[in-house]
Length: 243
Ligand SMILES: Nc1ncnc2c1ncn2[C@@H]1O[C@H](COP(=O)(O)OP(=O)(O)OP(=O)(O)O)[C@@H](O)[C@H]1O
Ligand SMILES: [Mg+2]
Image 1 (cartoon, rainbow, N blue to C red):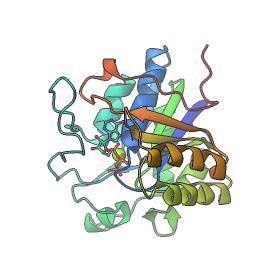
Image 2: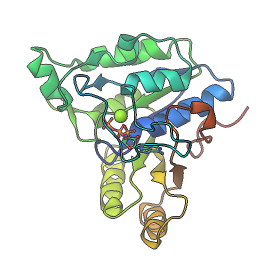
Image 3: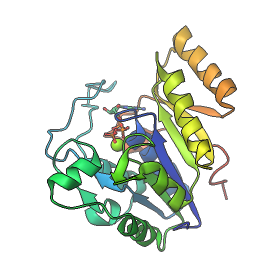
């Protein structure tokens, strides 16, 4: 099923690789182009944790660049959406653990049907639904139901967020293989944050992933996360053609 006519599912090579930033940049791009954008994240964990200092502590103007917002909050802001917390992320947990464990600690189980219903509800009335996964594709949500199964059930093409540096070729190619094995279409890989002056390794990673993965590779520079109006546009290859 596809909950909205157009949509994208942003996954990543793992946790903390830039999925939220990539999904937010896409949502912001679509919203700025006049689309009504809704956002969706099946489960958010780690709400008890203080906001982590990311790899970047301050942006170029001296503003703190780390993320003061939880994933669903940053996505909502980027999309200019008025969805409630529960409308974006039906399952939200305090501990920073895998979603199936977070649910178990809360004495419940994530229900795939409820996720699909929530995604459908989020997309109702929107032109585009931007979804962010949890961790990587093989993270369990409930029992044997993985993030990858949710991506298949939602039916949207994937965008894979990946780090630019050492180790990313293996992680990215594994993710592409896993996606394609389940019949998922992958629109592009986005390397993030892409440095202003990429090293030889980073430039080589970009080319190697494109050729071995047979995939368009896009890049996203460091964003001042607190200042969405300064963000560059990010349009996944082949998706959301300009009107
Ligand atoms: N282009 C970028 N500009 C600024 N910061 C970035 C960029 N890409 C990644 N980061 C930083 O990298 C860290 C991880 O990013 P993000 O939160 O988007 O990862 P994630 O894959 O969504 O993590 P999670 O698995 O927790 O959902 C954050 O601290 C974020 O600020
Ligand atoms: Mg995230």
